[in-house]
Amino acid sequence: KEESSLLCFHVNYGYCKGFPIVTAIYDKFFIVYKVNKDKDGNIIFDELVASNKLEDHDNSYSYSTITSSSHIITAEDFGNIKLWNLTQLNDDEWKIDQVYSITAHKAAIMDLSIHPLEPIVVSSSKDGSCKLWNIDNGELINEIPNARNLMKKSDPKLSIECRGSCFSIDGLHLYSIQSGKRGSTYLFDRLITIQRDNSTSKLTVDIKVLKVIEVSRVPCTKLKTNDKTSHLAIGSSDGSIVVVTTSNLKKVYSKQFHDLPVTGLGFAPIILADEEEVDCIVNSCSADYKLTTIRIGEISKLSKIIVL
Image (cartoon, rainbow, N blue to C red; front, side, top):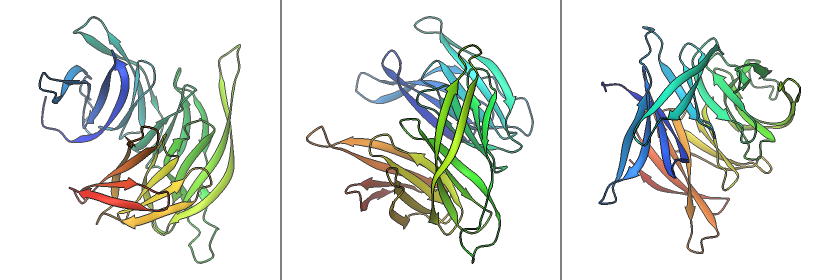
């Protein structure tokens, strides 16, 4: 292709005849790969299809995710969300078509999360807003309002903007990290109730705040959930990683692993010797050009494995 910055990638297991597919987002285009192995057992990436290059001079992609169906959702610096349909024509030929494009936010979209059961995506933007969208038609369903920082008298009364959001694995909760441009970051646990009008297929989502905890004394940058061990990982602007349990929103670990803000987080499961107990690792990357991997052992402690 051309020299370009890789901004993010997402994996969908079992989509392509049992093989994972990966969507890799670059500045002006994205590529869908099939993950395969060669005759020597080495991992290789077979390109399936690439998007058309963005023509806007100042616009670029910022994020993507893959739905459980044949759809890919991308986000852009201008705040647009686009839905793409990925179709296999034959064994060697694929095509990708844009279904729709919506103006979702006033600034770059930094995070997308797909609901595990319903066709709903939640987007978080640099403009501070967090919105829920109907994937089928691109309609706005609901929006998380900015809060006011009134929890500690010592903190300035700043608008608490949404920095990241994700759904729980059962789809009943929506987690978000919210902070001002300075000061503390709060983790919100919201109960969501989804209703569908069978005659019109219109979705409505009622949102209720269940619990709020302070997770950091500085603004946070990333939020990621894990579907194996019921943890949330939160990355901070000071390079710290915070781990919280989803059952009671208890902060079980916090440590600074990076010198600059955390720019990406990801969980990976580990099947232990008995093949029943599941452990996991948390991968983090940062503006300090380091990749850190930490392993969650007992729920109350983490051990650092390697820093690249």
